[in-house]
Length: 111
Image (cartoon, rainbow, N blue to C red; front, side):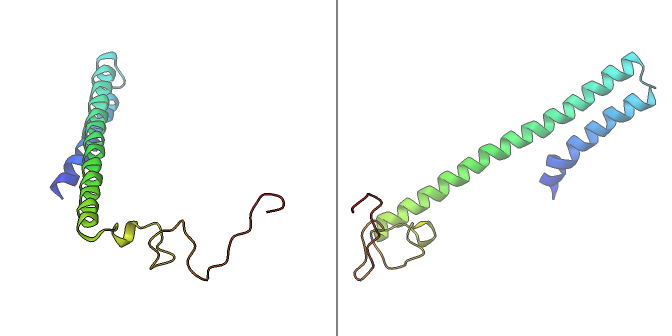
């Protein structure tokens, strides 16, 4: 909850303060400049939070890949949710025909 307040509500409050400053000062030059700076600051806070979330997501992907590699080292195959042959379980090599599986017709003429 606290992180969501920083991630979402802090930029919203800063941007709203900038817009409110512009409105309260009646659009005077100094009020407009100050309000614009506050709006830019709020957008910067939002953008920095977005960049941070983007970088953390990459760490999660690397951690997931490391877990999958450890599983592969222990068991000799990738975890089930990442296997390419989930629609045909029990196949070790998805590029070979299973016994009794019909052969696909060739796309070449005469083949």
